[in-house]
Image 1 (spheres, one colour):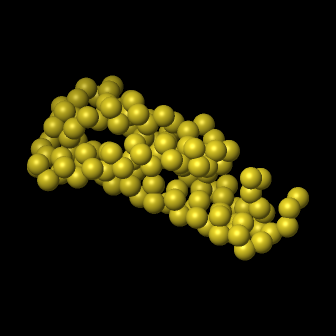
Image 2 (cartoon, one colour; image 1 turned 90 degrees about the vertical axis):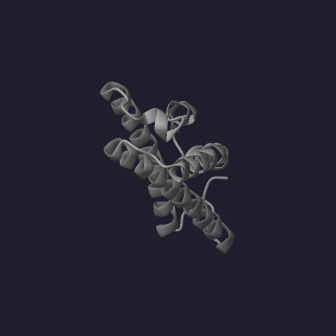
Image 3 (tube, helix red, strand yellow; image 1 turned 180 degrees about the horizontal axis):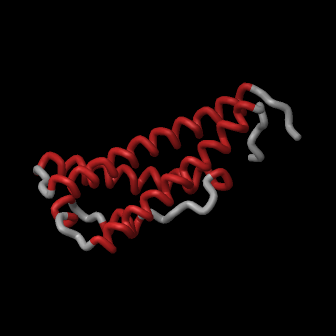
Length: 132
């Protein structure tokens, strides 16, 4: 086992920060989707923000997969999820089975992200370096 040093600590802290930022964005995207499902209407501003967040999620998720490697076990490919949630207006009145499928995909990704976060936080707490 390697010895703990400041550089390794900073690396783990950075990875934790990146995951937390992604989770925050993932939750914002979901909150917009949930609000639409209840309100059944979306403004042009909401659509614009939704698309902006969606683009950021696609780019950042690919980065997470490549950067985290072994810490992010079984990452869900969110491309199909993002494609299925094309626009807020397209989500109005979707069938319950499709809505349920989307919710399950969202939660699967959320769980995997939190598993990676927990793994890294435990390594940080126990001062265990990454195997990189």
